[in-house]
Image (tube, rainbow, N blue to C red):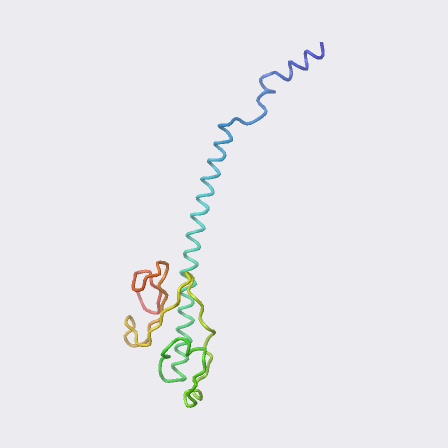
Length: 148
């Protein structure tokens, strides 16, 4: 008799309902996928903003180095390497107070920064810029030392 009661206990509706149904498991998975995709979108937007801010910071640092070079040499550098390489000409080397900065690395998108001693966007001084996220020169997302 005890054996029959134990079997009945195992087969009651509550005892059979101990696990999750397939629909419940799928519903939880769908919710997790939605939350994960939202997190990826938020992270990607944050990363893009951080890259733009890093490029703006680099533009500001290089602008300062170029201005210090100009104070010492009475002209803008012809190329960016003039900011970290001492001139071979002895008269120029005597005035050179550098290095004004370390050698410049690529922008946050892996491209080289651009420099022009005769500015087009800054007609009275130099232009220094990153081509921005799209990598195209002259597009609206360029990040430079000029007002937009």
